View 1 (cartoon, one colour):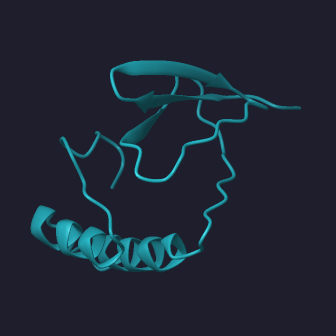
View 2: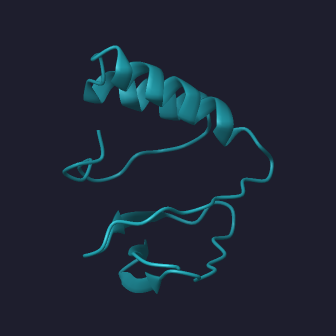
Length: 92
């Protein structure tokens, strides 16, 4: 049984993505996501796979309780990302 949803933000557009949705985000496209009203899981594919290192470092910072905004920005920069806007509540 599929359940849950996410909201994907691309530019000023917010799209509700119920369970089973597929969304393609082209490279260099500013975007974000937020868990919807019903928690869910999602599967991401990153090509190239450089994002794997980003998430490894991010989770290490969170688990070691050192996830300060400056460190998060440094991690993002190493993986050619730019974090814009505040980190959503519940993300860390």
